[in-house]
Amino acid sequence: MISFLDLKGINAQYREELIQACTKVIDSGWYIQGSEYKEFEKEFAGYCGTKYAIGVANGLDALILILRAYKELGVMKEGDEIIVPSNTYIASILAISENNLVPVLVEPDINTYLLDPAKIEEKITSKTKAILPVHLYGQTCQMDKINKIAEKYNLKVIEDSAQSHGAYFGDKRSGNLGDASGFSFYPGKNLGALGDGGAVTTNDEELANSIRALANYGSHKKYENLYKGVNSRLDEIQAAILRVKLRYLDEETSRRRAIAGYYLQNIKNENIILPNLADEESHVWHLFVIRTKNRDGLQKYLLENDIQTLIHYPLAPHRQVAYKEWNHKEYPLSEQIHNEVLSLPISGIQSIQDTKTIVDVINDFE
Ligand SMILES: *Cc1c(COP(=O)(O)O)cnc(C)c1O
Image 1: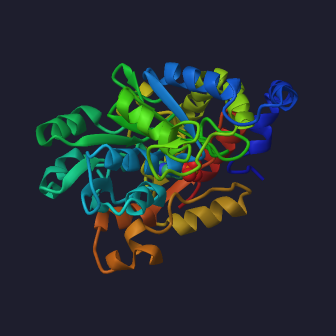
Image 2: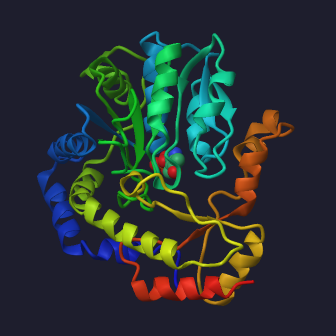
């Protein structure tokens, strides 16, 4: 069986270094916000090209805290509207709801599956305060167009970079393409911890300070509370693990690109739509997503041939029970995408041999 994602194998590459990093933390006697955490924040900000990175508990919290900080700073208030793609992982939308802000869904571009800049302006009202583009599957959105619209209407741009560590748009990386960005280090992400983790990146000092305080009980100074905050911190031990893995991220990405390149060149089945990419550097291939009318048939056929695939995602956010109020609405492109996409195995340790097997099986599918 070719598994969808061999996390054990991925982390086994760095086993000795990871054990050393954990041992160092265990022996330090300092388990929350110690030197590993501080160093990781510096290194991750450096990697993204931003002035600040703030380690938080997970990717959803990263997005929640950005919006919460903007509320505390008076940039937005409850009931304000945030523009977000209709096809995304639900967490992008949950972060908005959690803040009692209103998610305004915008249909994607059917070719890239990303937020369509041409459909944003018609959704802007006097209550719109931000655009939240999601670099879905690892490819950056058209940030030049999105930032231009944001400038015209005085909106914040909050990137969801949970799937796009290291992806470029022009000469800047994901995390440095808007006003603030949320990252996830969930184990299966391109930069994955051995547990939960997340970060916010930004160049805005005031915002960074506010998020840092909010994530630490609302406290900027021990026992002094500016806000009614929460506890959302990146663990010291996860920070130590992430420092090891960050050093290999670009190498992992280039191996993912090689697998994606092989798929793109060799899948030749006219029933299958391959991913559309703007340029090499804009995509870090968190997922390699193909599209076909007979998606369920293809998935079953691949499984019969010992190839495991997944669907990202089977149900559109507006069809979820959690968003009952939207169940009657129609987002046809998003629904079509949810009905037709299939994610093929891809990782930095996948062999060309396995990749070739997958390609051959797909090319034989009728
Ligand atoms: C994974 C993910 C998140 C949430 O990150 P967690 O660390 O799991 O909370 C948010 N947005 C997108 C697009 C994701 O893929």
